[in-house]
Amino acid sequence: MAPLSEGRAAVYEEPLGPPGVRVQTRPRTAAARGDVAIAIRAASINHLDLWMAHGAQKVTPPRVIAADGAGVVETSGDPRWKPGDEVVVYPVVCDWVCAECQAGENVKCPHFGVIGEHSEGTACELFHVDARNVFPKPVALSWEEAAAFPLTFLTAWRMLTTRARLQRGEKVLVVGAGAGVAVAAIKIAKHLGATVFATSRSESKRQRAREIGADEVFDSAEFGKAVRAAGGVDVVFEHVGPATLGESLRSVKQGGRIVFCGSTSGVKAEIPMFRLFWGQLDLLGSTMGNASEFRAVLDAMDEGMRPVVDSTYPLSEVEDALKRLDAAEQFGKVVLSIS
Ligand SMILES: [Zn+2]
Image (tube, rainbow, N blue to C red; front, side, top):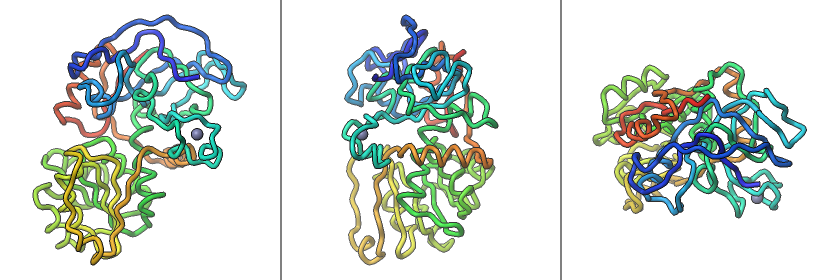
C-alpha cells in the first residue's frame, strides 16, 4: 500500500511557506499486510519540503512532509520485521514489481518518487510503509543521526559512486558546502579516500566544511580560478546549477565529470560548449538512488561514516525548522524529534 502517516503529523496545508505546514492529529491503525508501521523517533527535512510549503512542487495539499525517518517497529504485516526492531526508511517511492525494480533499478521505476512528495511523509508519530522500504538502523547512530542521513547520503552516494565513478586518490570539488546533500558528499568522498575541496559564500560554513574533513575550502566568488590554481579536480559535485556551473566547468580537469542532483539557483544554464568537448567532460544527472545503494550507505555508516546534524526541533516547532532551511543558515541536516 502507499505510505500512510498517522498520529500527530506535520501537514502541508497551504502554500504559505513555513507557516503553511501545521501539526494535525490523524487516527492510528495497525500495519496492513506487506507493510510495517514504524513509531517514528526522528524525521528530517529537506529543501524539497520547503519548496512544497512554498507551493513550488506539483503537490495538492494536505500532505504530510518529509522523506527521512527512523524509529521502532510498532506493528508489522511482514514476517521480516517484528515490534521493537529499530529501523530506517529507504526514502524512495516505487512499485517494487516492474522490470526495472526487479533489476534493482528503483530510480528508473515508472512509479518512482520521493516519500513526502509523491506519498505521505515521515514527519509523523506512526508511519506505515512497504516492508521493502524498511532497513535496519545503523546501531552506532543516534535517532537524530539515523533520521539525518537517508535522502542526502543516498543521493550523494549514487552521484559520487555509480554516476561519477569517484576513485580513491582523486580530487572532488563540492560546491555550496552548507546544504545537506553537500555535507553528505564531503563525508562520502572522504570515506572513499578522495581529496575534497569545498566552496561556500560563508566563512563559518567554510570553517565547518574543514572541520568535517574538507582538505581545502574556497569562497564561492569565482572559485574556478582558485581551484584551477590548486591543480583542478576530477569530479565536481553540483546541486546549485546556473549560479555555479561556469565556475564548476573551469574547475574540472580534462576528462573530468560534473554530476548534478539539482539546480537550486534556477532551471536554465548557459554552457560554454568548447569546455565540454575540448575538456572531454561528462555532465551527469542523478536523482536519489537504488535500494542497493542505500544498503551501501548503511554499510559505510557501520564502517564509521557519520551524518552531520545541524539542529533538532520538536515536531510542534516544524515551522521554525522550515524557517531555518529557508534562511539557508544550516550546515548539515535539520531534524524533527518525535517520540
Ligand atoms: Zn518499479
